[in-house]
Image 1 (cartoon, rainbow, N blue to C red):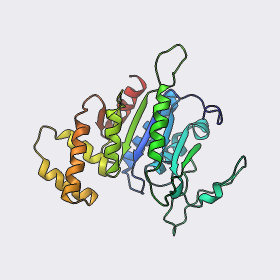
Image 2 (image 1 turned 30 degrees about the horizontal axis):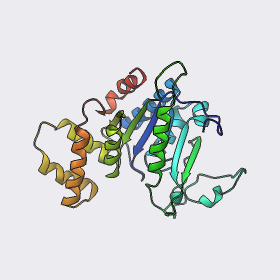
Image 3 (image 1 turned 180 degrees about the vertical axis):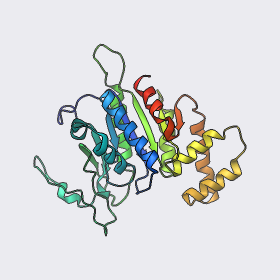
Length: 268
């Protein structure tokens, strides 16, 4: 990426995770996420990673870049790691050493997604499946770990810090969060309370650690994700494992606290 695309070596990696389907954010949460994300990226020379599609959390990333990003950020530092099988009109992208025009206009009758026009680069991951998300996660994990090994400056013995940001999200996001906080060294995770589903469950459980809420919380998990009791119990166990990593690595915050959270990222 540094050699072929002439990207500048990042000083921070912001890895954005959340729902892949469209969801609504309140104006306050959307504004704070967007402005905080771009402020962090521009202030540090960060790369932003997302799934790169024009739906779900990646769409909000693209809109943030469009609204608050500089021309340089739009052209150089926003990377989508995207499953090949979910991209609408993906055959338009096939070629070698050739310019392939791609028009990111969604087809309302297609079950696939178009790429976000406000990501600068894409890594397209093909495992042979069609219309399924998930195959990109292995490559994304390997890339993030490789970036962590890069030195911020030749004179400093410090790798590139990685920060995970969670907005909304389905059940799989809980496993993603657990992976980040279980790494060595652990990766800080910032969860946007009020964005919905997985993010709100993480936030709620964080606030209720000293309270016996298991029965009610299992019912809430089942309602949010339409899970049966056995599935809800398994997800609850994963959520508790995430909580065991508190307070050092998992940070729950409302939109009112986001600017101070990002400031702590910029000045650890």
